[in-house]
Length: 351
Image (cartoon, rainbow, N blue to C red):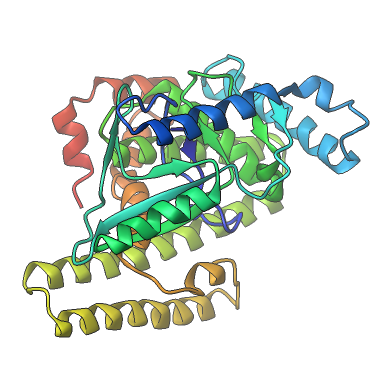
């Protein structure tokens, strides 16, 4: 399946939308799942329009054409200034005529914070299962819940096939800020530089470090200090939000390790999620009322909702240190990451 962003807010790094779905070749999966995946990908491919044509296409709204011009500039910056692949990815546009491109299902056992994994050829094992139709994702999540698991569904506004297809810019991405769109391109292209099967946390952290550095350099080149300040504020909020989820996850992990399933454990679990919502209200007060994460909390939460926090943030600090150790030279950083052994990568991501 594709790599997808789980966006409900343009300012969210986690909700943003990023769980690496990878190349759409889930041959080991059931026939129905394979069919919907292949059908969804083919539908996207058949509707691509080169961005240079979309920019002058009178059928596209002026605001869309302006955004696409900026995206084209960011795409050139990615290859010319960040050392990211110079290929056909994100040089075309698709008007989806829907809010999200895919919907991802995450799952855990009822009393565990460890994600359930699905394994694909080439991509290895990842912590989601993606669908091009929301109804299919919701149906599968209901099946998991009936089987005793915790499950959640997140809509994703962007995706990547790691260069296996000519991934387009999607209309669902245009709801984001200019900076978030550019940052997303940098993130997705980074997956084409390095991707290790079965290592979701490391892959996502690597791409997120490239995204953050790339967005900073992009805004500096554009001489846009206001946008840079807004981006840093959004990233800081995302980091604080992640820490909140990770703290909840660790409390739940400890509780599940030292308890046996019981009605008491069920209520203690609910209390933890109530505490998470209370702590979010306190955090929000320190953000001067910023409400970009409200929709995430306005629902019943379970273990599966915490998966993306662990996937994205566990490995980022040591990778940021690695980038600093090579003086911020991105090509040198890419090579340093490629030289890391599997054991070294796993060690960096222990949480």
